[in-house]
Length: 148
Image (cartoon, rainbow, N blue to C red):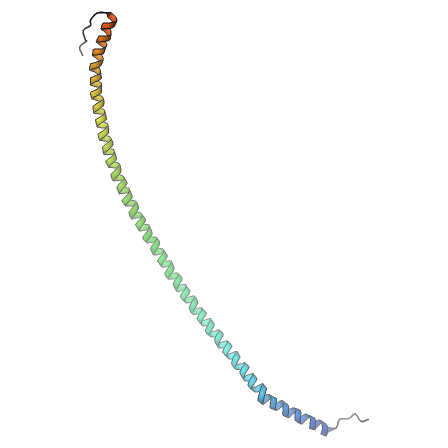
């Protein structure tokens, strides 16, 4: 039994192997590597475009937020000014109503005082007459009314 390799058999086996490897490289591996490289480039390009779009989106969102904040501040200012105007108008109306009510109260108090003075005068006269009548009844004789 001879265990030394025969160079012609090795050469005859290596040649078809190398031809097969070269054929596979040119037919399958080279196009596949080119395709994978192109796909990687496309992915990198898409990632770059996505990053650019995200940056534009962030810029637009910041611009939108700035405009929204400005609009909110303007509305708060407008609301405060309208509120102040309404409060001033309400204060004016309340002051006018208060002045009118005080005038009516003063007029009513003057009327009541006048009526009270008139009633007091009438009661004084009636009191003198009544006192004379009671004194006449108690004493049993007529009594003259006292001068005022």
